[in-house]
Amino acid sequence: MTGRVVVFDPADYVAGAARLIGEKIVDAVVRRGRCSLALAGGSTPMPVYRALAAKGFSPSIPWDKVEIYFGDERGVPPDDKNSNYGAARLVLMAHAPIPTASVHPMDGARADREAAARDYDGILPARLDVLLLGLGADGHTASLFPGSPALHETERRVVPVIGPKPPPARLTITPPVIAAAMHIVMLATGADKALVVARVLEGAASPDELPAWLARGGTWVLDSAAAAELRDQGKGKREKGNGPTRAGPAVR
Ligand code: 6PG
Image (cartoon, rainbow, N blue to C red; front, top):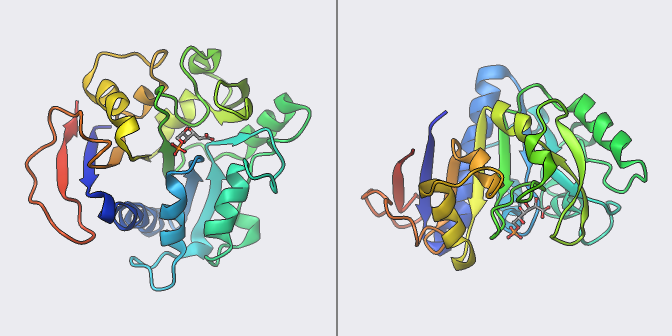
């Protein structure tokens, strides 16, 4: 799978990222009749989810054909302010006509975290159609943190971890889930992500140092601040409005 880099001006980022994700969802439904969409946690995706759920959003998303999964979850209940499911529910599920039965949160707060991970592994599709990921400044993605034993997991598709980003106890998808995804969309904005974006996409890092390396083959949707350290940003036509300002070259 070859990757690509799409860079938006900050003012265009949310609309552009939402449109790009919407097109991948519609593409999956056209091809397969349904779309399995795994949401990323953290703060970056939330305005993009809100845009996806907005009335009149184009392309029109057949939400009744979309199954919602999660790439990771913190060890908190759904109504906790740190819950990825809880945050997505507020901005996406509360506004888009997504059947409740189509939303599959991870049971992050269950005391038996191994059992919670096993149960989620049992409901994850063999191949996610669209996997959304976020990027930490340390190179983590989902809840795969640098140096984590989870990075060497080849069998289990969901595992409990203890990470350095609070809250520490989490459930996360593992490398096999990322490798199997049909479309990966990495969402990263802000100057604080610029160095790690360049290290992952243009450096010689390993997944152990920079777990986001596992997503190099996906579509990296960046704002110009997060793309600022990339040497090779392509010379695409600069468009105003929702279009990408520069579509970068395929990521090596
Ligand atoms: C989480 C996320 C995590 C997040 C990055 C970026 O649960 O914390 O899965 O991987 O995507 O830390 O977070 P921001 O978007 O808030 O910078």
